[in-house]
Image (cartoon, rainbow, N blue to C red):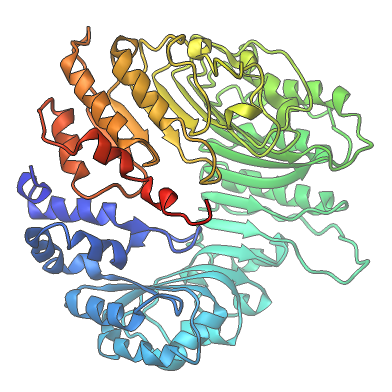
Length: 581
């Protein structure tokens, strides 16, 4: 049934908006893509009329000189959004050509309420053409070191209520719009912010960045202030040097009581010499649930600070390069470090280890250390520090991302695992026979598998009685082998191996005749549990008309389709016509 017939208009518009969301920059919020909207208008005349007649779908405008037909798209969005409030995102603007399309906004300036810019250069180009925005309420500057253009923009818009991304320096602290700041980078020491805390009372996310000092200048202790209760929910301490410990701990000793009730997320770069003191103070934060530690292998691990009670942290991210200082006796330090973390992170349910030598912290996954651990991500670990563990039975999700060395999967076998993601081609995995491939009996109760498309898996010999979702993703290169067709072949020959399989996610690099034969064979055979595949999702373009045919087959209907001979040509014509072969 058509989406527009199944749901009321307000729900249908939300679904379409969600389907068209995209990110133009990794740190920006998702917005509706006009290109995806235009594609959806081609579904049918009904869809076209509905989308064109819904102003809110056209109100997210992205401006970038590299876009094709930018002026045409901008004019279309200004027209179809009617009187709806506009949100403008500014990417890279070319000052020589921006005058060709920015004047189109002149008659709609009063509708622009949100403005996001990449940096101050783009902000300057934008306002050189558009002038002021009388109803502007929100300004997000992604990489704005405060300058004349940013100051002038904020001063000229008294309607502003929210400003994010500003780099706070001494010049900003003298302004009269500190109350607008919500998310900031700070380039001054904490004690210099103290006189302005009342005006900065609306800040929720604050990042303390490295402070530029003359070469050779050292940090000096400053008088510690007792701070009032602060409303900051996210704190990032990004400054670190060999002699930073004085400032770091004076900051922390002041901030802990001030943020004890409000802080929910902490992100800090810390060396070994400071780590134990940080861990000993975490329990004082009564609302914290997420911690990101960026460990620097410098200094001596201090074991004198006692951890008397565990913190409330539930999501823990540890990023490290433990080989930073080759003189450190890491084999002796790592067991002590694991024991300290186990005492502090008793409540952790989500753990991510990122870094080429983070394998030394893998023992944290053992059943005796983190009793509530449920989800684990190992990202770019090289497994240099070999260790045998018995994986905690509480762990249900395991995700391995490539970038370092391959994991020894035998070490992670467990009956408790329900979901596994493997971003490795089979040639790089340890303990996998080249002929048989990966045997999933390591996880007998596995329900969801996400695997590299080139990973060879022993589908027949594995226990798959609980597997209900399989995703075979695209490899790092289009030339990598893809196992999708082999999986479909196994599905058609051995349907009883997959009694509860309902979802397939594939890349359209398959033999289409095998896909149709697979679905027809499964419809013809009676699976014991009477569960059939309900959905097949393709990550990419598929031939015209195939979605309807595949949907009908999934519903158990008989369809008239192209012959196997004709289907076998699809996807291979470019190869056969390549004159270089």
